[in-house]
Image (cartoon, rainbow, N blue to C red; front, side, top):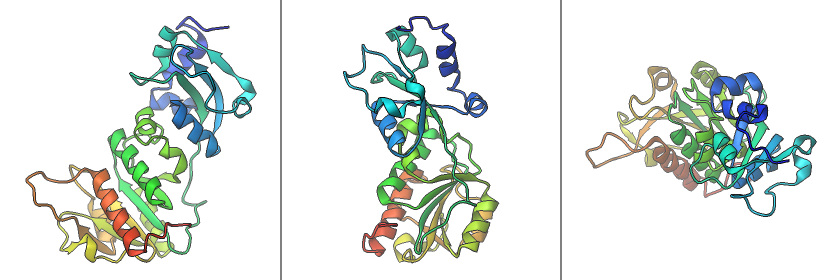
Length: 266
């Protein structure tokens, strides 16, 4: 039976999940879009419920019915779908999914890991773009340190194209991340416009973590003091800095160039 009332308890629950506190208390996140949902399922995430709007969705489901808990698939009217969707141009699929959280304690880096560490990221769009870049570069992990945004914010999922599911994303305190990197023998290369060394002169061939700060303030002294090397990206314009996700892409692909484009884990 099609759900046509926005007052339906399941619809009200789905709408509340836009808030980080509700996501934490319920143990559920919202995944919107066929592409993102397919990637989440392929990466082992469990779908609790799927809402489908036939006016927007295709004829075939993006995932197998068996991948949805208890086969709970609900058709909803267009007005109801708009109540739970976050995007303006949605494709008709919204799923409630159980999140997964990686930890430093359970993470075992390979022989030559390539890691991204981002400090105090605030904008979901920036974090999502970093996750897309990390996925493209095959980074072993992304450490989201002292985060100011939820890694499962719907805008992070959207801007990452679902790469939040394909990456190993670990949220932790900066001090924990630094201690773990030191313990594992992973060099920290800190990006800062005040460094003397240009990024292409630095050594990225061994086990390395690329540390990036906020666009407004950059890395804090905690990371700069812990860094084994500091690098800058030369800029000739009048604007203060590149977007942090663009900086991440430049540094990750310089690391891949130095490694002969041998992707980590390949």
